Image 1 (spheres, rainbow, N blue to C red):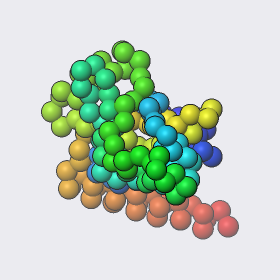
Image 2 (image 1 turned 60 degrees about the vertical axis):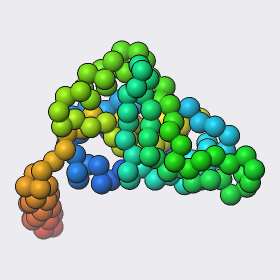
Image 3 (image 1 turned 180 degrees about the horizontal axis):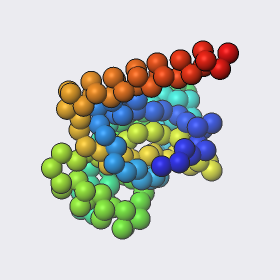
Image 4 (image 1 turned 30 degrees about the horizontal axis):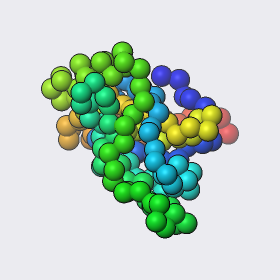
Length: 156
């Protein structure tokens, strides 16, 4: 998939997800936020580490994503680990439902970013990697790094 332009507005990224899972496909979704959550997101106070997406009753929910309380929010602050509804088209939710019923498939949040003033989450349909797959990926990265290093030296 082509690299998207939201890198300038990237709020949080789940780096561990790409290490632990092989991402098959990604889907962009909006989030239903309450009160001071958007201000906390704009302050980059988000942790995606243990988050996942659950589809229930024809709706998608973002579970276990920690958005820290806004410092100036006092009384009106939100629960940091609140389950948040995702805004997606019906066909996208149906696709997630079908995919999540497959064995070994997990729905994980990969990134949170701001697009046109709205907070968006990039949901990945992923399959868990085994230990030997992770080692194989690390070997491949090292080999690519070594090849690039030798090519740079030859160009000088």
